[in-house]
Image 1 (tube, rainbow, N blue to C red):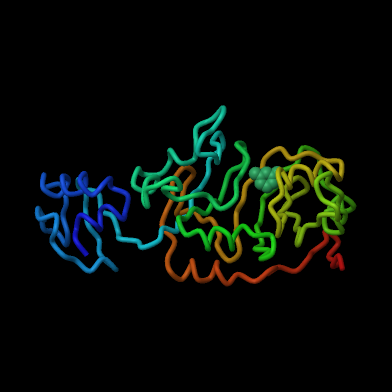
Image 2: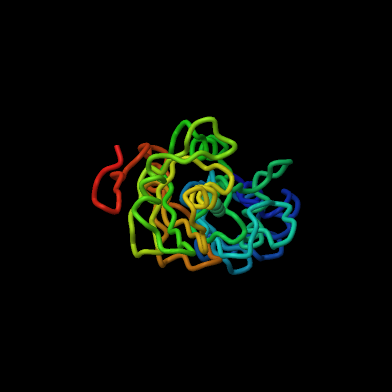
Amino acid sequence: MHLQDILFSQGFGTRRVCAGLIQQGLVEVGGCLVQDALADFEPHGLIFKVQGVAWPYQERAYLMLHKPAGYECSQKPGMYPSIYTLLPGPLRTRGGGAAAGVQSVGRLDQDTTGLLLLSDDGKFIHRMSSPRHHVPKRYEVITKHPLDATQVERLLAGVVLDDSPVPVRAAAAEFVSDRHLQLTLTEGKYHQVKRMVAAVGNRVEALHRSRIGPLVLGGDVPPGSWRWLSAAEVAALSSAQPVVEARVCPSGLTAD
Ligand code: URA
């Protein structure tokens, strides 16, 4: 594949802009300056540098972002900056056209922190966000008032939300402390955690998503930063099983 086409596919601008970057001596491949825009390279596994910044060729982009509070998941945010401003330009423009760049898999509220997946693979986004696939998502929920066993049992048994014909229930719930609950959901309704907790007479003070399917947000991705997902992580997410955790009540009884 021509070097200018490789850069183009990765979001570095039009073919003409990419050819210009190469001809100006701003692109290195394998530690060597390449100034021929039509030089041929096998793209898979290629790492090149543009203006000194290393970039691995990715046919499709799959990444995780640690969303900080105070960011909106919209491309056109209303009040707060967009999460897309936390990503380098090429990730926002790759592919070109109307649906250019990576898109988030679902959304988190402006004040929610934690794990967000982004991709430019439409099938992956659909699979991960489709309610049919029930990919479990774990939230760290800090409540205003101490939680009691009845509240947690009601979250597991199901609560009525105004936009759902059937009660909505948590797949798993585990006490960390009396105001910190780990709640696993397999759906992604609007404000779902906050509304479920309100429905049992408590209130969410802080919300953080710590896990999606097998993928756990670790200390290697601090708030506001992102990293590529490995091929193994993408494969594990794509084959994530509906519910991985036992349903646990505070008393140690199962809810079923
Ligand atoms: N549930 C909520 O209430 N808010 C989020 O951001 C995610 C899940």
